[in-house]
Image (tube, rainbow, N blue to C red):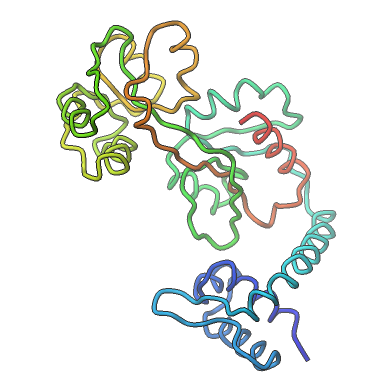
Length: 290
């Protein structure tokens, strides 16, 4: 007789292409997860995955079984969580974590629509995740998706980054990648950090190399970087959602527009809070006004 938990383990393995990663998300040991899979394969009578050196790949029978099971498992788990949520304490304060700039541009303008009190904290993706794991935050906005047991991620949006210069900056007129890279390397740069976050992405994705530049100013605040660019301090890479007013007011301009990169942003929250009404309400407001 098939155990329901075998099905849950099978679906977790299917999603993560890894027994060990599936075990982490289900808070089980790897041997126990392997036993669930072996038992289900014995019941089905054939292999559900093909093992490779890097990951496991579902067989045709595995794909067929997953397509039948996934909606049923999700429905049962949602129903179970709904019953549990009725007995969970309500949250009078929602603790939000985000980058300072995202909060300022995307959350702060809509804060008057929130029907619950909020407590906000700012930090890096790593810092915010640690606070989430310690129950010091309820929801975080993050650009990094870590494999963390008990934490669920929902895609929020793609943020687009472009190279920005002062409005009166003299720009090289060329669409030759080599000439553009040489010209950009010779300019004065303002960066969020010494490791050149995002600037490095531009170089890697478009020039297929590491940037050989040394920023003249390090400013760990995107709003302040934009102000420095507008004042003529140099070039930088900034998200487009931060630039609209500056571009419209003629204080800055985009340089070599095709040289842009995208970054995925996620909403992350503890699975145990998935069905709390206040959590869902706040997440809906964030997603509506992204």
